[in-house]
Length: 321
Image (cartoon, rainbow, N blue to C red; front, side, top):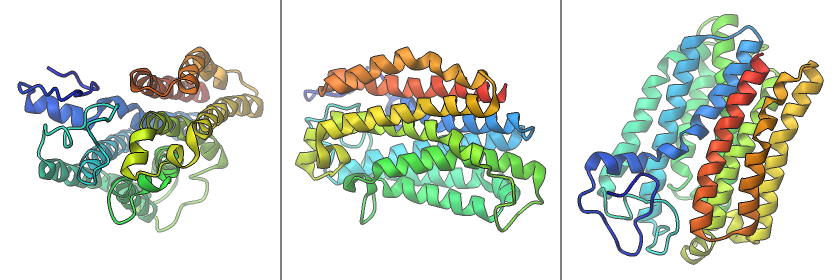
């Protein structure tokens, strides 16, 4: 059987692959650290400020995971029907293009997952009010618009902005906001209550935004040649390998500057805990700077996700302490 995260290449297809395994591949569990990371950091800041609320935090985590999985289904479906996934693709298995699951079933799964995310967010709407409605619907719409709709964001070089904003800034501040609002404000606020999104939280969101975007950068470097052929105008296609490598290193630098800022402003060394991941960051960055082949960049893609997860855990704990 083909393992999750592997490619179906050279025309090989495992006829015995179970339906459950195919759906697991479609959900792309290796991407879920990108959904959990902002919740970890946002909760760490909330704990540091004496605003930790367990149920809102868990609801935020559930919603984030569902939106990530829904977005994965959307990418799998729309990339296939729009011809962006071809036989020469060097990335991980896509179940729609690979014929593992019928396109309409993947599309239905996408809508059901997003609908479940909306339902799971109802308690958060009671706590956070209209701002949560806006953020939740915008996140779902952006997840679809990333590769679907009349102007797919990922096809026009806007995927990086989408990830930076929604999987970084919005996700971290939103996690903090629902916990702060649960303890500081009345239910169903129509605007953002004062003090529920301090500047410190926005700064703390920057490393998550940067490292989440770097996952996409590696993906786009790996797929640059195929994307150029299929008309997918990512930043790597528009500006080339050098630009993307500088982008990767710049975002990496941004991620590691923030813990230093926290250490200086708080007078504590605990926020520096994520610096323990620097050796891993160096190893992955070296691969991204030197390689273009899928067999090298696929591991770098997974390790960038693991870097994000490790950084988020250490940073969340560091700021909480």
